[in-house]
Amino acid sequence: MEFYHGNPQDPSWLARISEFHGHLGPWLVVGALVGRDALQRLKTPGHWKINVVCWIPSDRQRTPFSCMLDGLQASCGATTGKRNLWVRNSAEVLADGWPVVHVMRLPEKDRPLEGITYAAKNSLHDWMKHVTDERIEEASRQLARAEVAELIAISPMGQREFAWCGHDEGRLGEGETT
Ligand SMILES: [Zn+2]
View (tube, protein in one colour):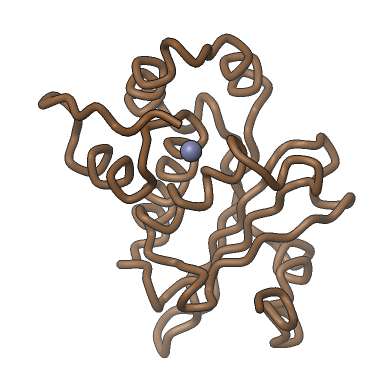
């Protein structure tokens, strides 16, 4: 695996996630785009204030797909160490076979629980097919400049989505991490 070749033109967040992860790749960027967008939309600083569930089919719970977990961790602050980032698999959630991310802002005294679903669109899947190892950093930089909503379907979470994430019975994350 190549290490990150920093470019002075890289925005600081891109350099930060690449240093954290150890290289600059497209799925890392996807995770960071989701994490950054979620903090903005949910108006939260992230970290302890959110829960994140990243749904990945079991046959894709490997690199490069799993690189998105580091993008999420480095961008929104939900981490496996804090036990507020989970990786799960579900045929129901993953109807089209590609990763789905749920970001939930925990309820506070003046704001109820709120969450957003991120599901990659076909345009992102098609784009990924053309990324070769030789141009992985260049392609990732291009992705980092993309309009998130053009590549990823963004929708508010409803009762069904909260139930998937265990937020209906307060059992989120139970038995998920060791
Ligand atoms: Zn990676």
